Length: 266
Image 1 (cartoon, helix red, strand yellow):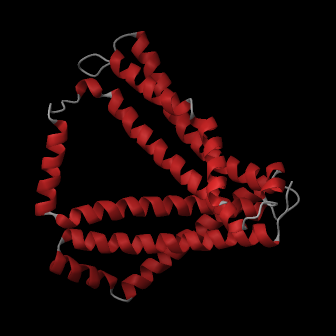
Image 2: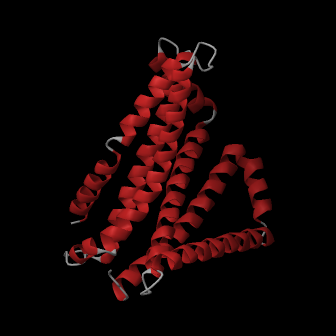
Image 3: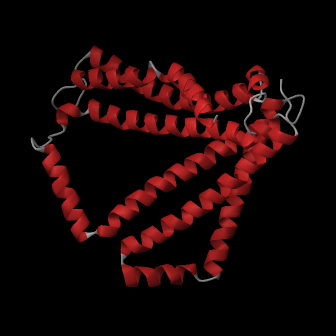
């Protein structure tokens, strides 16, 4: 059933971004073509294209945030929710389907954003003819000289993914709290989000202070001396990932409990 839910959510995501993602790439390419060899604007057309590119990039970010809020709010807490909660699936899987779709959307949007910047400056990037060979050669050098670098890069990606999930689930928890009330749901959701963010900040500061008291700094220096910079970075990434997972679990539990015990559909 989770697969069917994801299929439905991905279809909704495609309807939202089917035009915007290709448009961002196309506008970036056209803007890059309009620039002169020195990277400056070459007349009114390039200025207009630069403005359009900026607008598309801003719209990409704004619509991504709106999509996260809209799919959770309309999919579970409005008319669509009457259908969703009659399905033979747990509330946790309903929330998970929204979360996974939002994460995929964020990943694709980031890839489109990076590709757009590449297309914007493609005229000024001197790539080697044997690009694939150069990539494999660089991989070989890095693997032989800094094998822990790959683990650092992997952990960094996992860290970004985990904290993106925590941010999404934080939004879900705030919206769920707002829907416990009959009136002023949007305002209460915003207030709940601000309060949750403040609590999270204070908890992270408290955890940092406790880590200092128990000698985490000395521990990290010991790892750096014994294993090098990348070993210390990998340890730090792991701690941050575990902290992010803790927040994910907390927000996920809050959301699922509210939707399971105190569902208040509009």
